[in-house]
Length: 280
Length: 280
Image (cartoon, rainbow over all chains, first blue to last red; front, side, top):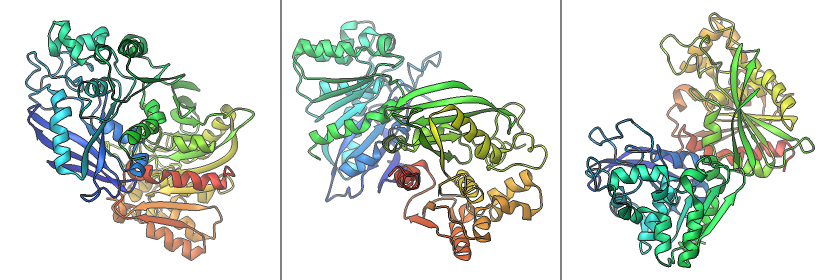
C-alpha cells in the first residue's frame, strides 16, 4: 500500500492510497477520511461510499461536504474507485462513459473480456474492507452508501450481505438496473445474456425476493434528469411493499442528480448511519 | 445575462451565468448561491469569493462546503472567474498556469497585450457588483474573501475600497506579491517595470501605508507548500503592526494549500462576515 496524497481536514486526515488488488488484478486507488482522535485505542467505524459513473475516489471527498460531520461523529469514510484501472484493463470499444472504465457497476463479471479485472463486487465487499481493517484504526463495523451507479452498488451489497453492513443508504440509485438502459447495457456485457443471472445485482429484485431487516434509506430528487429512464425509485417502493421490508424513500422537489443534491442531504445520511453504528 | 446552469442546493439555488462584460471586453461567467427565502422583500447581503490560480467560478461552489451555513445565515455568495476568457484574450506564451488565463491577479493591466482585457480589478469591484445588485434579490452590503491569488485580491480590494466592503478575509493569500515570484512575474507583465506602481496591488504595502479600520481575518496552514516562497503571511503581521491596524492571522498546524483546508475553516469566515453584515 502506497500513500499518494495526504491532507489535514477538519482535524482529521484525508489520504489517498494505491495498492495491488488481487480480486481485480490491477493497482487500485482509494481515499480514506480518518476523523480526529481515531487511534488503535479508539478505533472508529467505517462508512463506505460508492461513487457513480465516470467518478473516482476523489469526487465524494472533494464535493460532498461530508467530512465536517464525520469528524464530529467519529466516523471514517472510505471511497474506492468505480472500476479497475490500468493499461491492460479493457474499456468500452467506443469509450462510452457508461461501460468499462469508470463504470464497473459493482458486479463480478463472468464474460470476456471483462472477467479478468471487473470483479468489483468482491473488491468492495471483501478485499478492500480486509485491507482497511488491517491497516487503519477502524472497527469491523461498516455502513455503506453511494450515488447513482454507486447507490445501486450500495443497495445490492447491503441487501446481499446484511451481516457485513449495519445500515445501507443511497442517493439517486439505479434502483432496477435489469429494467433500464444503463443496467441492460452493462449487465449484458459483464454478465451475459441470461437475464435471470442479472437479478442478483438488481436492488428492486433483491428487495422483492424476501423480507429484509437491514435499515434502508434512499434520497432522490424530483428534478433528476435520469429519474424516469434510468433510476426508477418507484421499483424500490413496490418491491419493499411486496416483501414487507421497511424502506424510507425521501423525494425532494427541485433537486437534480448533481453533488449539490448529495451535499444538501449527506448529513442526514451520516446521522442515519451513526445512529445504527451506535455513535449517537 | 444568460443562465447556463442551475441546481437546487440547501433549499436555495446555485446558478451560473454568462454575460458580456465591458470592463474586460469579453464574455464572463460567474456563479451565485442564493439562500432560501431571498426575495425582493427579503434581500440578502453578498459575500464575494475570489479564487486562486487556475480556478474558475466552479471550484469554490463545488469544494468549499460553504452553502450549508450560508443558507442558514441568509447570505448570498458570488464567485467570479479568475481572468478574462475567450479566443481573443491573450494567454502566457508558454501557457504557464501563473500568468494570463486563470491568472488575472485582480489588477487593471496597463501593458500590452494585457490591458485590453485584463481589467479584473474594475470587473470585480464595479461591473460585477452592479450587475448582481440590479439582477438579484440582494442588498448593497458586501463582504469579500478569497484563496491564494484570490486572497491577495480580496485583501487588496478590501484595503483600497473599505467603503464598499464591510469585512475582508483571506485563506492562504499571496500577502506580499511585490516580493514573491508569482507576483513579480504577473505584475512586471501586467503593470510594467516600475515597481512603485505595483504597491497599489500589494496587501502588505497597502496595510503598512496607514491605519485601516475594515475588519480583517486571515487563515493560513503551516504545511502549505507555497508558504515561504509565495505567500509570506508574516509580511501582513509586520505591516499591520507598522500601521497599528487590527488583523487576525490564524496559523494551523498540518494544513496545506488545498480546498480541504478552506473547507475546514470556511464556516469561521462565514460567521465572521455574518457578524459584520449584521446577520448574527
